[in-house]
Image (cartoon, rainbow, N blue to C red; front, top):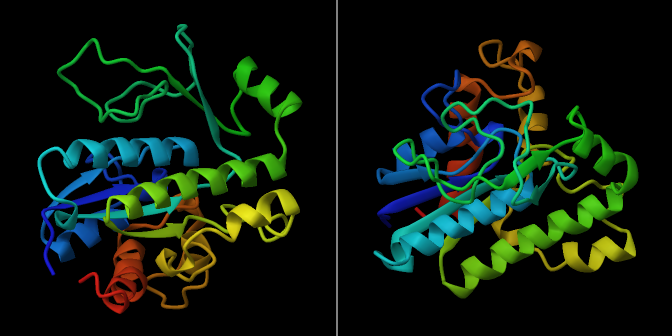
Length: 250
């Protein structure tokens, strides 16, 4: 089976910009698929923006190609990362450098456009800006984060299935679907609707890498909780590609 376009999304664990030191899993999957690749992952973005950027990109692609020509791969991030939309100018600790941007947009980075709107503010538990600290002090809860992550995943799942697009999903860490909270009644009814057949059956990409015993692939904490290039290649060859074969996607 062949495709014209592979669209991948996620956080920094799925980032593929040339300035990034490691070649993460989407690069290796794209090479195996042998088709055009569009990556919309972005460091520090949460599952809301992962979903929006993927779906916007798919919607644009469907204007020029058929659903059967597209395959989508997503690795969901930590559920405690969030974002908000604003029409006001907001400063951020993140540097606007190429695709390493905050504020950001659902649209792919366009270096030729000085008018590109960037109204989505990414926030996380370690952000030092007052608006982020206010959010986590007053409004954040782990249950709410799990609810929102499930809703983001379901929105993405339903859109892709409605449009008959092949897709696969995975989790960056075990914090995406936290076992301490997914049985909560506000979470479980959502989590149980997620198509488990499309989820790569591992606890998380990070946990998979930490357990590696091959001396050449041993996890290095200096990589700041990201897989390096050899690990990403092994992860693709040992986990993702067999999963795609099992699903008859390739």
